[in-house]
Image: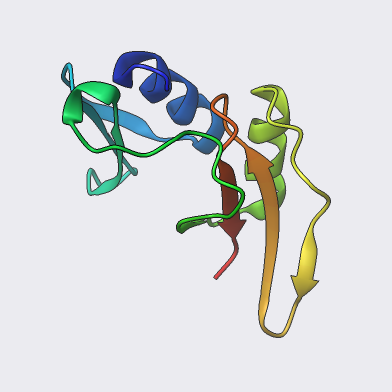
Length: 107
């Protein structure tokens, strides 16, 4: 599992988030309104979970799915093509450096 500081840098670039705080056990990232939108836990947190989950544990809401897909591609995450239904929800999936599945949605 990646350490919080390295994970924070990757998630900040891949999802366009700001870094609020990084400690030995976690990293908090925020959106433009400075709300915490993601907390990335590291091994020192004591929470036991193997990296590389084969499913997305949550989704990340973005204003511009195409731009988010571009950032993920630039971060080496090999995002899927945009999928879903324009009437319900459009989404892309990708994997973070630990192999965890990310689900990025437009609503």
